[in-house]
Image (tube, rainbow, N blue to C red; front, side, top):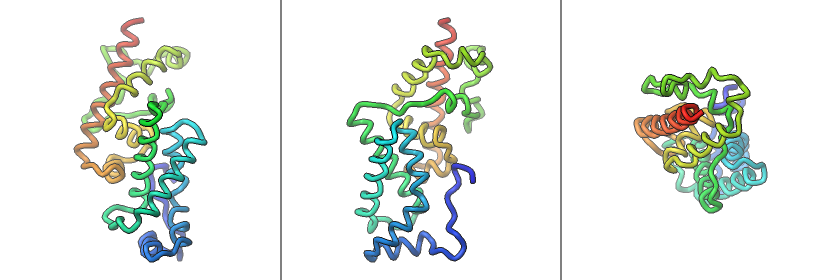
Length: 209
């Protein structure tokens, strides 16, 4: 199953909608069954954003507790998995903000990014320099990693959140919009700005060498 696909309930298993209604009526076992189909995906997001298993587990626990407490407010306009994912993303950002840390982005994640919706290649071209075809040892340099991380850290929080969910965690543009409660055009705009900022940082790095 692709990472950005929502999990499907086994044949004959209660739907998320049915489990939500039972959970809203106070059936905690139904809530546990409901979140079990989404918990691994939520954990992957938390781990990418926080960088450590302990912090990721804390984010997941906070997200599940928040989801249970606020379940009555869930109106079913979005899929439950997207709603829970959004709660987890916000919990991770709150923890990062409190600790004054930003998500760590690996070189593998950055080099895997493709073209954005405007037709501009993710980060491949900059100042006439196709950095994506540089030798592996150069791409893995400490200096370049630091330049990319600094660019990610410098992004506005709204753009950084879209970048992490859309490009790092691999959701589609539509899923990112639903998860973060944004319009598709807003996701595209923020993502494009984030990608341009990172591309410019990489270009400046190579121009200075």
